[in-house]
Image 1 (cartoon, rainbow, N blue to C red):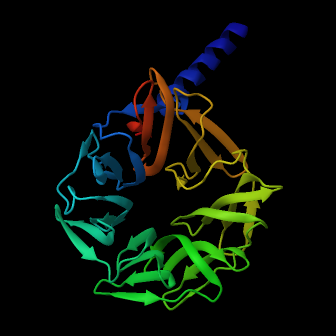
Image 2: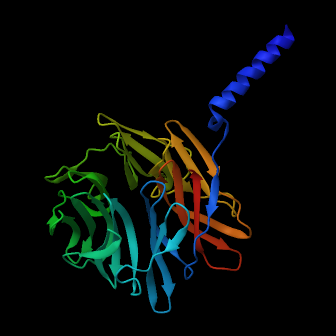
Image 3: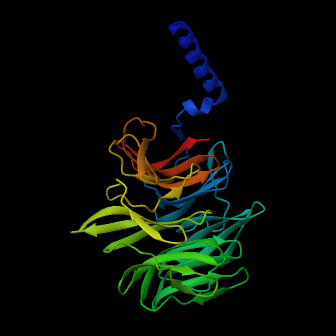
Length: 349
């Protein structure tokens, strides 16, 4: 009888393995080679459209200053793109937005802001209506784009409607905006500081208004993640006696709830919604030779490490992006006796 039971158990396990082989496999991070830039380099952003297209931005150092840096992932390998206007001029590249079939990238070109626009395989530019002293952030969706920053008169919110630019007004008491993101042309979100503390604003197609997000006291905002489901997650830090701890404030359209996952004081700027529905972000690693990532799924937080890198003394993923069923990261790695250069890793796919 015991022998028969053993046979049945073995058959059940074998069938389970045949029906769902992936269930027994835990995806791991793998290293992706990246052509080197002029170190030390700085990574700004990463955007992906499915598994076969991603763009990473930043800047490298030249003898006379900064130079813009753009890399493209084609599903197989990273390569450098130097075909965009101003690629050999002083400046830097910022946020990447994938708008329909196009690629939009913020470009600081010799101090003046413009939008790089790639359509049908060719680059063009969309100039801004004025030069700002500070360019804080950029967002674009079909039919709209925003640039937030400051000039001599203070806060500026520049809005593009597909044909031209206008300047939008922020609510009374808003001092400056640190970031902006959008789901549609009539649903954009921004975050910054007001005379009474941190605040989240929302554009409804008519005006910017206080989004009435119940932020914890003594907190600031690093980023906002908008999901197709309607869920909104505000990532930031709360300060208690001068000590910061990461907090996530999530809204479902009816109420806001703040949680404190075990992330220490890690910055949430690189947080994204992964292909598994969880929130992912790069965190400070306790291993000099490996990167570290956090996965936050409701009340549960887990961690994973990137591949070991020989002689590495600092592996720092700066940006994450969902690429189909995979996650891509892009950042820097510092090898002993060298300056930081580029690294990329992939989970799944």
